Amino acid sequence: MIFNDGVMWETKCRQEDMQQRALENERRAIDDARRAVDEKAQQLKSLSHQSALIAGFSMILIVEIEIPKNLHPAILILFGCTSALVVCLMLVSMLNATFMLVAILRYDTVEREMTFDKFWRTRCENDWKFALRAFVYGIPLFCLVLAQIGWVKLWNYDEQGWIYASSCITAIALSTIMFFLTHTDRKWRDWLLATDNKLRTNPEAS
Image (cartoon, rainbow, N blue to C red; front, side):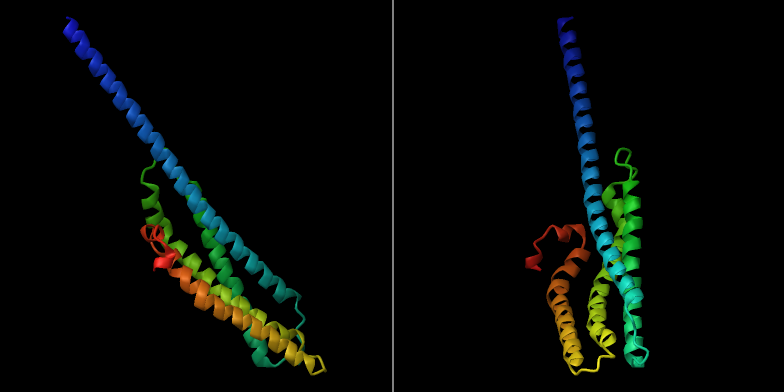
């Protein structure tokens, strides 16, 4: 009788221990899912805010700038096209990031019909890459718009100095484009577009 009571007690203790471990594992899984959601949410918010900021600057520039009536048609066409491309690319980036943000915030971290990693890869990965590419392509175009500002704004100035001023603005903007393409974009774009496994490696090593 004593032996049976001991076996029953050990069985009960083992069952309670297994239940406690299962509960701890479930809590850990929920915490991991919430951390993953928060991490991606911060990335999407950052991309969305920066895209909206640049799109806003470009829209204000298009609306507020006074275009001379005698401006050369080639400069006018180039300025209009680049300005519109910047706004459109940044809007695409912002809208994709915003919709993805809404989607991941609706992810159920408790029930988890699928893991968040699988959810991200199947539903969001391609849109994330598309949004990031649109943002990256828009940056040089934004600098190209800046490079044209002097020629558009100062076109009617009679003094010869406006040519030098416009040339300086263009040179600075083009230098920024070259730095972005040869350093920032070259170092970070492929790394940020890589899978999560590659993101855990050191970017300097690639």
